Length: 256
Image (cartoon, rainbow, N blue to C red):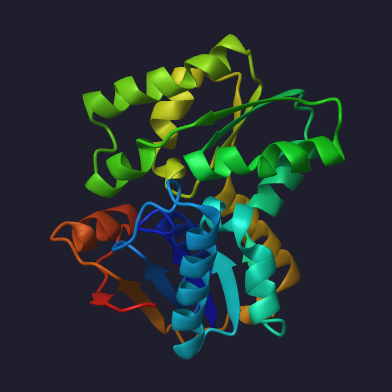
């Protein structure tokens, strides 16, 4: 069974891509909504939260982990692999880097949380593969709370998107990596602001390419699909159901 975790509802973009490809896949999802966002936290806290989340999923039967959080992917993958050496662990950063560097991109923009941008993980990885790339990174700390609030097409959100994307437009980037799994929920606004000539890479599609190619055996068909959140706001179920385009049952879980 796949275990998928994120700091909130953003990781459901990975679940949506999984369900599009394997509707009967078994998985357990954890959104740590009580402690979101992770992107404003320090490294030690991010690692501790990641280990808590992984244990929660493994205790509920997960035999492989998808880290549907770019902040955790930037900081906590070594700690997770050390704690669970026998469990396959997929991060969202690596597949997005692979997708960007295998294209004809020359000027790449990164949109991420403050912690992800501060880590420099994307820029280092991109430059390691292709030293010719020009990389412009922008921290977008307001994106996660706007998504968690469900303001996906609000005028305020549109103004925030325009403000954050201004440096990328000035840098004339040809490719934008959505460096947070919350951000695909704003992809239509981002694409509208950047224009049709700019390629947008979202990590949910990139990571599911990797899972399906290398570990299709992890996707069985008994359709045990669980959705856990560490804090349940009145809008949690409705936002999650709206995005997944299906009614889901949400449960409250404790971590840490």
